[in-house]
Amino acid sequence: MKDLTFKNKTVLITGASSGIGKEFAHQLANQNANLIITARTTSDLIELANTLQSENSDIWVKTISVDLSEANGAQLLFSGVGDMGLSVDFLINNAGFGQFCEFSDETFSNYHEMMMLNMHALVELTHLFIPHLKEQNSGGVINVASTGSFQPLPYQAVYGACKAFVLSFSEALTGELLDTNIRVMALCPGVTESNFMKRANADTSGMTFLSAKKVVNTALSAYGKNRVYVVSGCVNYLTSLIPRFISRKRAMIIVANMFKHSVLNNKAQQKMHSSTL
Image (cartoon, rainbow, N blue to C red):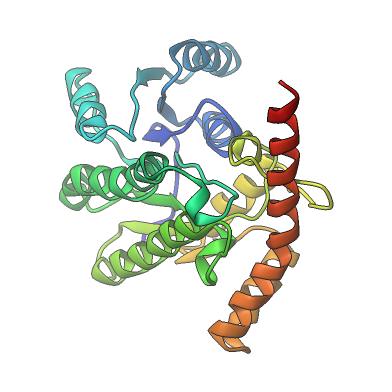
């Protein structure tokens, strides 16, 4: 396995306009990587690209606005990269979202969008870009999973299942590429400073947030060591080990009790707010 360097390499980052994706962009730009950043909001991408290039004159940053939850989103992104005459050395599948609620309280259309973004786009992009990685026998993929990958997540049922899929897919792909110089790793962050929790409609009282900077530091360090997966944060890592020592049913009950009160409390507040409108 060759030593890892991002210098003068091209890195594609999805969900790059905020949170972990944005921090990946900053840290990789500081390592002199050239970047292709993508998200849905054009203005946010252009602002980030201008900032990165003003701080790092030796690199270039390209932007592609696309909604990866759409059926043709991944193909549009792949085609956009090709239309620029570029190839990708490293792919960071970061885009994703979740929802805190009882399963039946959310629309299926929202779950469909979640599954399309968290799983379908991730797999399709990997499938589209990995032939080039195989051809050059270098580079790789970082898939952003979650600490929720390790056990069922009541009140985040679909999100948790998506992230369990991401971890399993990443590990399986690593197994297929053992005899190559291509690295695949799943990053499993816990609660992180980003827009994720707000979009997920989560009650964050009592939660301890890790900074996106620390999460990405952990990710890039582990990736350099050719880790198969990494959990950011010591407490998160220890928590991820619990399902190894108790039954899956017991793990499910613990998580359900953790989130039930906050979800029901959130639901009651929303009902009260709507009744006053």
